[in-house]
Structure formats: structure tokens, C-alpha cells
Length: 528
Image (cartoon, rainbow, N blue to C red; front, top):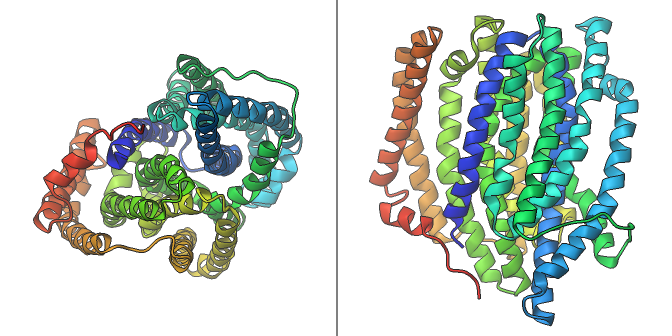
């Protein structure tokens, strides 16, 4: 399948997006800080982002891509070469249902912005009416982004099914470019005015992403047109699956929403911002690894399971877990052990103070404990979706959300916002363990001997890298608060030396060999 090659394509473009995202966050931290305007904007941004993660990128992709691939395969069986046209016609039916629903839902949420924000924040007890009113206004500005990005997800699912992964992976770059442009060229004289420009940039980026995907689909010979909505059997099937899939795919997002809501209600001003900035760094490996691997294996799993080749499907998921652990575990160790110098070097300037660095670093170290789990969730859930089983991940997700809620309420009082992050990480591991246990019990996935051996070697290599980081942190941390050149050099040394130590250790302990990496990067042969 060329798993590593497909993952590297998606992950490489995601890396560009995440680097731009860090630049964006550095600028936002500088001009918004971690106070009233920042907390209000992040709450407004969390709402459409939540629905985007649940429906647009999570549930919709998980349900639509297998159905599109199956429709294409069945069309080719009936008339060789016609599968693509049949699948595109199915996508057109989905568009005709999706478009009016999205418009009505977005208008409803904009009209109900005030009660929705109050339900999330309790009216911001720490910030008063001004903070609440600002969050409501910004929510109304950002919410059209949901409708736009949902249409992007439909078009991106089509392109992913045609093995054009790079186009959809490049779309988020436009979001970050818009927000960077807004803060650089159009920011206001006050943090509140700058928050308004950021909210506008979010919606503008959604429009640009949609235009980009429309252009790419036309280049691929795919043109969707609105038609009279019709509930065909396939459309009914998709609608029946998408609700449960939203809960299953969105466990992490729901847990973050719970954490953010509790922080807004019970913790001092700035806690919402600490959790956001920590989560932004924490989400980096999820975007680069988890989403990349999960996106790459879903079409292949759908084809393998559809053809009855369960052994190949199990092999695919073992190699995906292996790759995910190889990339995610060292990231978790680095984010946990080097949280303070990383936050200081990236964010501590302007309105973002040394106190804010300590607050965000504590949350980052706690979030990082769950990094491998966040990634493995993205690798395991396609095993259910490819079999059109969306209910099981829902049950697991609901249990993990209840577990997270209990954990939050237990840990928030002694540990504040750090307790919230710890609970989120533990809930992710609970989710992973149950997902794997269920697949194992159904005899659909078993850890093979190669995975078990690789896992032990990956853990050893990550531990060696962790030791090197503990020695390096006190040497580079004083330079993280210096000028731009000092920050860049210090961050480069920290990340570069850590990466080199891990790479060397991985080769020495044989976690991976040069030959294996070369083979994985070769282009897979085209299916006949």
C-alpha cells in the first residue's frame, strides 16, 4: 500500500500547516496574551472547530470514504471503468442533502450563540458581561466556517478515495495563512479588535479552502452539481451511520470541550488559554501522524475487508500501529520532558508572560502523556468504520467521555488546569485499550510478533532520547527567552539533537532499519 509514503505525503503537508499554525499562535499570543480577549476568541473558535472535527473531518470522512470506495468498486464490477462516475453521482446526492442542512444549522447556531456560549462557560464568572458578550459576537462571526469546511470535507473525501491525498492535506495551510495575514496586517490597536480580525479570518479561510478543493476536483474530472434532494438507500445508509460516527470519532474533541468548559467555569482567567496553547503543541503529532496514518489506511482497509481479506486488513493495522508508535512515542517524551523550554521559546513574548509559560507548560506535560493514545485512536477506529460499524466506537467514546468528566471533576480541585489535562490523557488511553480489546475479541486484529518486538525497541529508543533531553533542557532554556535568533537556535538545537539521538538509538536497537524505511517509502504498485 505504500503506507509510509502516503502518510509522509499527508504528514509533510500537515507539518507545513502546523508550522504555520505555530507561527500564528506565536503572533496571537503576542497580541492577545492569555486574558479576556484570548479566552473569548478561543471559546468562539472552539465551537465551529468542535463541529468541524466531529462531522466534517471526523464522522463524515469515516463514513463517506468507505461508502464511496465500495460504490466505485461495485460500479467497476458492473461495467469496467464506470465505477468513478457512479461514485461521483452518489457524492452529488450527498451534496444535495448536505448543503441545505449546513446552511440551516449554521443560521440556527448563530441565532442561538448566546445560550450556547453560556452553556459552555457559565457566562464567564471570572470575566463578567463584557467577556461573555465578546465571545457571543465572535462565535457568530466564526460559525459559517463550519458549513464551508464541511463541503471541503466532502470534496476532500472524494480526492482521498482517488489517492490524491496531498490536495486535501494542503487545505489547512490556507487557514493559517489567513489568520497570520489578519494579525500582521489587520490587527487592531487593542486585543479585542485583534480578536475580531482573527474571527473574520477564520470564516474567510473556509471560503478559500472550498474554492481550492473545487478547483482540484475539476482537475481530477469530478464536478458536483446541486440537484433536488433525494433520500436514496445509499444516502439513508450514510445518514444512519454518520451520527454514531460523530460521537466515535470525536471522543478527543468532546473531552477537550469538557475540559475547556470546566476551566471557563471554575478556574481563574487565563486557564482556557493555557489549555489551548498546550493542546496546540500536543495536537502536532496527532495531525502529523494520527490523521496521516488513519487517512492513509481507511481506503485500503475498506478494499481489503470488502474483498474478504481479513488477514491483509489485520496486517495493515499492525503496520499502522507500528508506524504510529514509532513516530508518536518520542514526540510524547519530548513534549512531556521539554514542555517548559518549548513553550518559553515559542510563546513567551509580548503579552504572554513567564507566568503564562509555567501555566501552559504544566498543561502540555500532562497532555503529552496521552499523545500515543490520541494517535492510536485514529489508527484503530478505521478498523470499525471500514466494516461499517459506527456504533461500537460510539459506545467506547461515550464511556471515555464519562470517565473524563469524572476525572476532571476529581482532579481539577487539587491540580487546577493541569488536572484537567491529566484526565484528558488518561481518558484517551482508556479509549484505546477498549477499542483494541474489542477488535481482538472479534478476531479482527491481533498484535503480531513483529509489532511486539518493534514496540519494545521503540520504547527503549525513546527512553534514550528522554535522557538526552533531560541533560539538554537546562543548557538551552536560558536562551529561550532571548531575542529571535537565540530562540531559533535554542529551539533548533533542542529539537535537532533530540531527533538525532532518537534516530541513532532507533537504528542501534533495531527499532527500524534503513532497508525497511527505504522499502516503506517506495511507491506501491497500482491495483489492477
